[in-house]
Length: 244
Image (cartoon, rainbow, N blue to C red; front, side, top):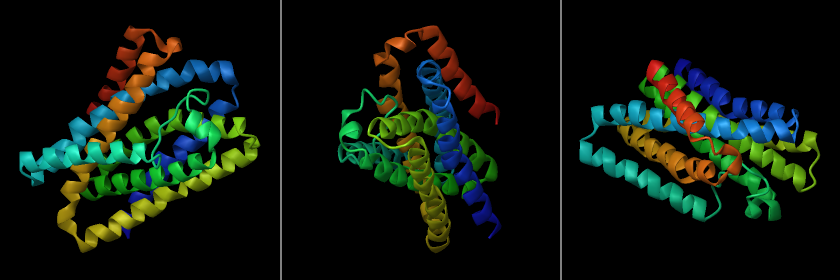
C-alpha cells in the first residue's frame, strides 16, 4: 500500500501538475504563452533524454542483457510511432499547427486520457525500482506535459469550449495517470520479472517523444530560433536529472 500511495502521488504530480501549470499559462495571455512554450519544450527535451538514458536504461541494464534491453527500447520507440500514426497519442504544442485536433477536438481528450494512463504506468514502474527514480521520472513527465497541455487546452478553446469546460476536461483526462499507476503496481505483483522490460520500453517512449515530437517543434518554430538558448535549456533539463 505504501508503494501504491507513492506511485499514485507522483503520478498526480506528473500528470495533473502539468495540466494545472499549463492552464495557468493560458490565463497569462497569448503573447506570453507563445514566448514561454518554446522554452518549456527545450527543457522538456533535456529531462526526457536525461531520464531515458541516465536513469531508465541503466536500471533496465542492471537486470537484462544489453541486447534484450536495447531491443525492448526499440520496441518502445516503434510502438509509440504506431500509436501516433493511429492518432491515439498525439503531442501538440501549437493550436494553429495541429489541424487534426482543430477538426476533432474530442481526440484531444481521448489522447490525453490514454497519454496520462501510460505516463502513470511509467512513473509507477520507476517507483517500484526506486523512489528517487520515480521522482525524476515524474519530473520528466511534468516537464513535457506542460507544453503539450498548453497546446491542447488552446485547441479546445478554439473549438468553442469555454475556459472552465476545457480546464475541467483536461483535469479529468489526468485521472488516467492514477489508473495507470495503480494498474502497473498490481501487474508488477503478478509478474515482477516484467519490470525491467517496462523501464526499457518507457525509455523508448521518452526518446521518441523527445526526438520525434519536441525537437522538430524547436526546428520549425520561428519564435524559437535561438539555438544557444535551446541548447542551454536542453542541458539544464539533462543536468536536473543528473543532479537528482
